[in-house]
Image 1 (cartoon, rainbow, N blue to C red):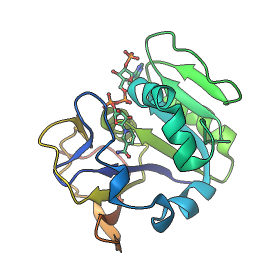
Image 2 (cartoon, rainbow, N blue to C red):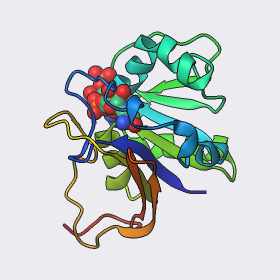
Image 3 (cartoon, helix red, strand yellow):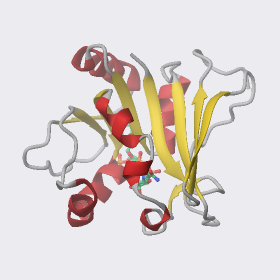
Length: 188
Ligand SMILES: NC(=O)c1ccc[n+]([C@@H]2O[C@H](COP(=O)([O-])OP(=O)(O)OC[C@H]3O[C@@H](n4cnc5c(N)ncnc54)[C@H](OP(=O)(O)O)[C@@H]3O)[C@@H](O)[C@H]2O)c1
């Protein structure tokens, strides 16, 4: 069982524009050419922040086009927010706030031997990292720059560095990198 932050990013390190647009992302390639189908098959539970969840709510039709259904996850999903958010009919959602550690425990219990997917955003992935709970960062680096936007991983992670485990080219639109995270808080 691994806790994995799996996301696409621009070359300059943004996972969405400042106003939460992903319009730049979808023309870059077909999700079925990436590792996503094999990745999601091994996921037992998901966690996401409220901006990511609200993107899913706003783009239910686009998501349906891309994934075949407005809420594409059969797995239980923990949504972090300090606000009250509307549920999605038929989705297995748990709304939570605060410390990621008890949520991680609950996710592990639900996922069994399968992996935990931290969908994003970057700071939420950072909260799992801060707690020493993140095992891997898997990024599809898109062949675009955004200049500014929502950060990939707003943390200083230098020592020990991430360990690059694999690289894969996906067409001309993406380079997919898989990194292992040193388990435990980084020294600086
Ligand atoms: N490129 C990709 O593949 C990819 C992947 C994932 C996401 N995205 C996009 O990237 C953007 C990410 O947005 P974001 O950076 O703002 O991150 P986010 O994690 O989606 O949302 C951040 C918000 O979640 C809530 N939150 C986070 N941690 C919390 C905690 N411990 N307790 C309670 N609430 C907590 C807070 O909002 P409130 O308390 O106000 O609710 C916080 O402002 C979205 O537009 C998303 O669609 C892109």
